[in-house]
Image: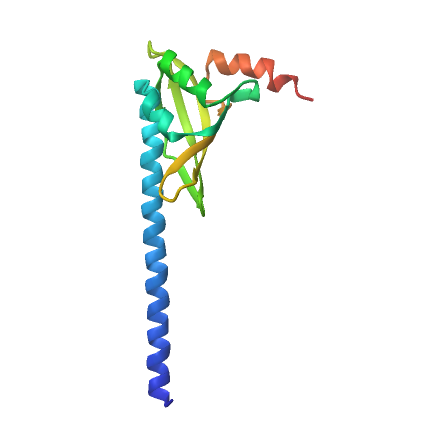
Length: 168
């Protein structure tokens, strides 16, 4: 192989690597968009009390760990909560991380009761698993209080007094 042929070969190889990396970035971006849309559907199902949609998104092994870890709910418990406790929520931008067939979606959400009164601001962490290729299911949700100085609510104050202030 002469010098010019070897330069052409190296340039071709570099072009192929760049194209492959670009395609991987595009696929990752599409996957994050898909997961964000699914996560927004989960929020919409909470808001509209759509237990049918939630039933199809929640995995049978789903667990919801509430703030302070004092309560854990199964899929059936969660569907009951959605059907009987209307909520409103406002969410900040969510961070999405994908690890093969698992994805972590997290960010801050402000919950309001049906009258619009702020219940509290929380950090929500959801774990989705793609068990059947292209069918993502929610398997785990952990919600914890946002205890920053800017967010004041009776719920947070009570939770702080009951849980966090008692820690050594």
